[in-house]
Image 1 (cartoon, rainbow, N blue to C red):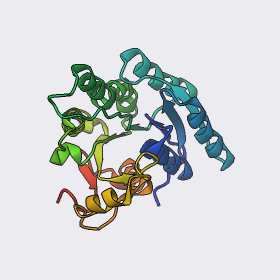
Image 2 (image 1 turned 30 degrees about the horizontal axis):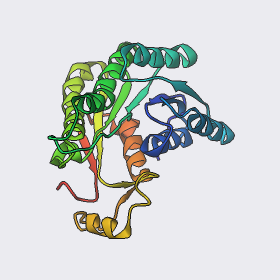
Image 3 (image 1 turned 60 degrees about the vertical axis):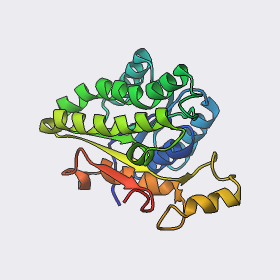
Amino acid sequence: MAQFTDRVAVVTGASRGIGRGIALELAKRGATVVVNYHSSPDAANEIVKYIVSIGGAAMAVRADVSQEEDATALIKTAIDTYGKIDILVNNAGVTRDNVIMMMKAEDFDTVINTNLRSAWLCSKAAIRSMMRKRYGRIINISSVSGILGNGGQSNYSASKAGLIGLTKALAREVAPRGVTVNAVAPGFVLTDLTKDLPEEMTNQLNEHIPLGRWGEIEDVAYAVAFLASDQAAYITGHTLVVDGGMAM
């Protein structure tokens, strides 16, 4: 099991769902975790309280990471508080699904800004510190929708495909300084938002998954933990697909 003692991690959009699972997994392995949230302070503080209760260290920081000032302030807060940033997980994301003929331009912009621009902004803010230390791990949470495309999600699929391109470009820029940049692309994952879907719908979706089941949040968190670890030091610019075989 990868250990992150003395590592400082920032996880964006960490108050719920996959982000929450990632924050908890890194903390359980010894990382000090900055739990970023935008509009769910109670949920974020609950995570911090749990991490502290198991002997870890964490803090919750509110920031709209799609905005440059907030994204920069988030990273600065982490560095000012803990002296460094070792791991950045760009997880913040939203959906505004609709067919393109019915989708509003502002819904396209919101998804691109939250899912893609935020990752660029947070990475830009963190890179200088990582390059100076000649160590860093950046993991962008993409999606199988960014690989296969998904009808009714032209905005979301574009944002997640963009994250894969960002991952590759940034990986080339910072590799000489010992910083790796990778992506994780989940498929269908059971979260609070999806666990109550009708059984008929779940069964229909399962037909597209060779392993025959939806993923668990932990499946994604384990993948992130691996890419953030020293064991993955020779992996960069890669997209690790965690989808039960959908995109193969």
